[in-house]
Length: 145
Image 1 (spheres, one colour):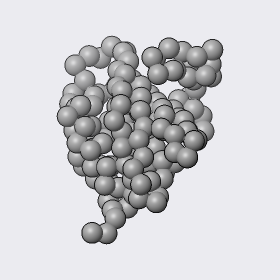
Image 2 (tube, helix red, strand yellow):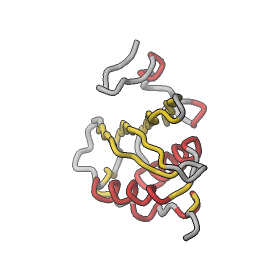
Image 3 (cartoon, rainbow, N blue to C red):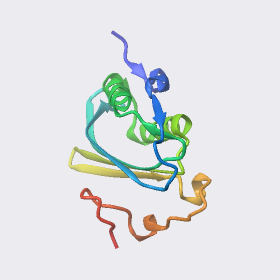
Image 4 (cartoon, rainbow, N blue to C red):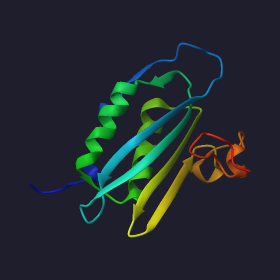
């Protein structure tokens, strides 16, 4: 069987449900078993943390689980994967803010942490939240100073 590449990731798996509130609030989601195949088709593992400020839609968690499950058979670098994941979530849910932190498990004695935040001006954001400027959040969702 030939490897599936990142262009095989199906964004249509992600489903939205209407936001039950018009008030501002934050949703935090932890994905502790985020797995995919690295570029050498060896399994890679990560803990992924989503910080989500909804607009009109919220994430249906079952569809997020199915979306993540499909990644187990995808061969992709984690640098490309976090960007695809971000783009897919932004496209489907159109949140006021989305922050993704991906803590990759060590391979060969080296671990990596990748972060994308829609609030960054480099990502088109207004930099209105500014909590990322203080170092982001740790694994316990505590703001790092």
